[in-house]
Image (cartoon, rainbow, N blue to C red):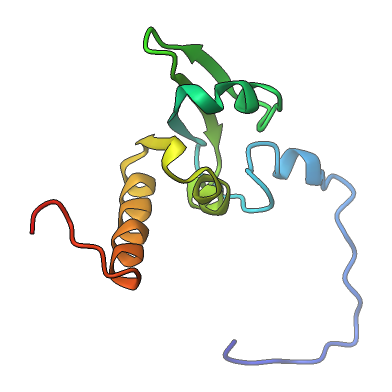
Length: 123
């Protein structure tokens, strides 16, 4: 914040405001004015049943793979909002798209390697 000003008039929510529409592609509560972005995740075979038990997003689509893994796709307003959910799956999920989400997870993995003093494969 740079400046605060107390006003005398009160705010009225516009009559055409539809919060459900505004958040229709949000993962949670983040939204943007841009087109939703496709998120593609690959879940390990041993968690597929758990993933399929819940409808995580209204636009999600799933596709079983020959190796028993599951491709999960969804159109999300701001994929970075999904980070806590993705972290919760640990090594049982791989972010395939978008690349900025994948890079954000990779950065966290490297941070964890530093915290736990684990050497990377390149060392």
